Length: 511
Ligand code: MSP
View (cartoon, rainbow, N blue to C red):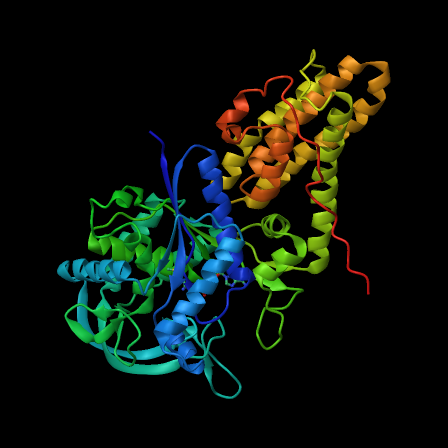
């Protein structure tokens, strides 16, 4: 039976249009989902939208719309972004759906039945932009006297009746949990942050609000709506049919990986496991946090007018090119800069030149000199063996890197093989062998075709469209494109279609 793998993206707030930051997290999760499928896993990949709370309610009212029709619109836009960015999700959950509301109410009831929830009064600071409560000590005072959260979000003083979750009682159990699961939070910097937050002592968490209406009503007390983070986190289980343990999808729980942005690790690595343990539900296996992108060195903001839209970037530079750049340019957990120049350089040097030209040169030599059919291997030279061994090692190397979300290393390792293949083709010079030793020429071209097949196979999760086309040109049947299939060589004489460039150079428009 196939091993299961459940991976999620954060569900995105529908208070504004999707941008490249949202696309990035989803693309990273998509690469992993596709990789696991390629590696023979039964994958469930979830994404969706986070539609309740004060922030969304305010955004709707600013647009002069009722929250439901507003969220319908924005959620559809996020779904369109996911579709156009090639996100291969198995389900797209919206927190305004009935299935979610019902599952979320059930989670509340389990926590309440376990004695983990009580009614009290909340008084303190709240940042609507972050949908988060802050302690006085976490805030900074601006020169004008106003206070802001560590994220820079303005805070307001809130005073209202509220239900609380007994988070204060979970400190020891959480610390024990992190200790027993050293890989639960990545990267190390996020893990350290979470550990020091929990070691610093936990206060009970306010989990309901009464000052607005746009949320899931608290079971038995509809004057309260649930805190939007409790509502949102629950999506990871409600999408699987929680609380129905017989729901067909429930077999996917616990999640193997929650991919999140670094600013929301506290919610995923502290509150979420505590809620789940309180309700008697298994905890997820790992939370991996991505760093943040800035654009040409500046934080993206509407006022600077520098917000990059993923779909527009894909239309300008090519979808696979943008996906490649985002995962290659920086380590996953680190912050990075989207610069037009760096993007164009990667497209022209690494994609068009290193990989595109290698494929084009090899395939057109086969088309011209081997009657367009895959030549057979010859007796292997040392040079052949070294290149083939490097190519054959790729699946194992990438498995290791991708299990640690080290996308940039996975790509760097693949490019080592591509560069080695470029060195090989130059040394072997098959175009010259054509006259002097056509048998050896055929053998060299076969080594190149096999190397390209391995490279294109492992790169499919990153660049599904172009690598699919490259595998078409290499004559690899659609049902022989997973990692396991690499073990079986393609039959000699497999007819190959006319080669066509896969990665055009990006040329600046004149003017
Ligand atoms: N709704 C919550 C998440 C709930 S999950 C149960 C939320 N939504 S969000 O719309 O603000 O999206 C946040 C995610 O988008 C971040 O966690 C991060 O993954 C991604 N990014 C948003 N801006 C980003 C950048 N500038 N750079 C990289 N990723 C960023 O938080």
